[in-house]
Amino acid sequence: MAKILFVSDVHIGIRYSYRVDLRTGISERTLDFVKALARVVDYAIKEQIDVFVICGDLFDRVTIGPTLLRIVRERIWQPLIAAEIPIILIGGNHDSPQIIEKGSPFGEVSLIPNSIAVRTPQKHEFTVHSTGERIGFVLLPYMTATQAVTYVETIMGEQIDREVQMIRSQELFKETIKKYVTSLDTETKIIVGHFYVHGSKIGVIPYPDRIHHEFVMKKDMLPLDEIDLAVFGHIHTTQTLYEGKVLVPGSLERVDFGEINEEKGFYAYETESKNLKFISSSPRKMIKKYIEVQEETQNPTEFILEQIPLNIENTILRIKIKIPSHLKEQVLLRRILPFLEQKTYHFELVWDTSEEVTEFVLPDLELNPLALFSDFVSERYGNYPHQKELRERGLEILDVILSKVEDEK
Image (cartoon, rainbow, N blue to C red; front, side, top):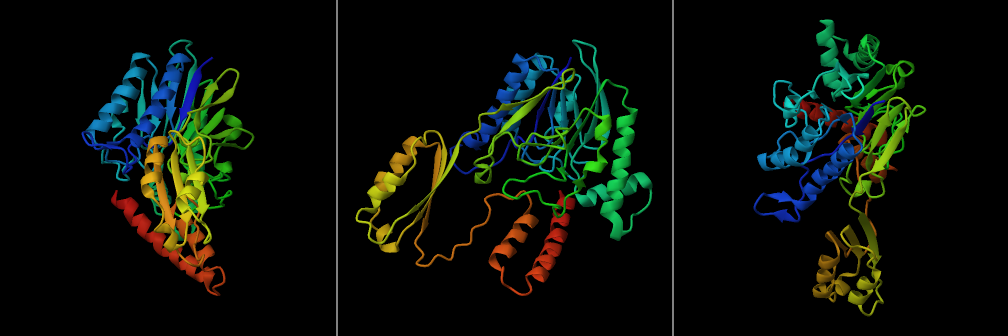
């Protein structure tokens, strides 16, 4: 029996403007993400995990400073090397330059014994040192829709007509995945990728049928009857799909307030029993609070203090205060700010002194700016007679711009 650990979307290197160490230029909050992965490494060592799989977006961007890379090396790679736990790491949309010739911050993983860092689709067969069990992986690092078409065209040696590019590239990817799976000469077969899987829930967006600019991995592209498990990074919401055959570990830490109520963690899988276990990563708690100060409030400072939630120790707290402008002038910040500084890990105060409620509220988090724009049009221009045309034209323009940005990475 082999034990395999799956973790995804760690996003080490994400920048925060608060609690910054002036010596290193790194925020303590940024180090939260390293610490979260270090706890996963501790678990892997304690439980004698046989393979440590990172399903993309280990880093939040392609340019990571040497100090942070050193911290990752000391806290993550060196303990795994000492425990002789091999690593499989695939590129995500955040940490893989779209031009393959460019280097990536996770490239040094390929120097670790019996480990592999992958930026192009391929298969990998692995022999468990302790048991001799053979495990086969089909590895599918991230590609945009445009890159997927280009990849398929390169393999085919011909161009795909624009009208059928997505459908045809999905068909050919399906064939490629099938060939890889069939060619694996192993007892266990697992697909690992970094794509949006059709049917996945994305935070506050319930099961979108399509995400613009994304290459969608459809159910029929995965030979689920021939594999033991398919594990996909990219979506931050933990979930299982298709009778438990497709696993989405989700992100390891709460990246922002859009993930405020989401459970975070990683999965351990046993090949013999096929037991799948979710382990919480104990992410830092986030709290949002809305406080409305009425016109007749006699002491706005005391009222605000009374409304602050309990149990805010070491949390990231965001408070939005709706208050008449003349009452805001009476608020004694010297009483509120020290209290929040002492209690919380970090806090944000947002003041709203507008006389009329004309606020437009967007969902807290969107993985894709195109989906965000679509929601914006729906909310702001819900009664506009040409809303559909406005959305379609806007999405078309954004899609072109995003394609250029991806190509320039």
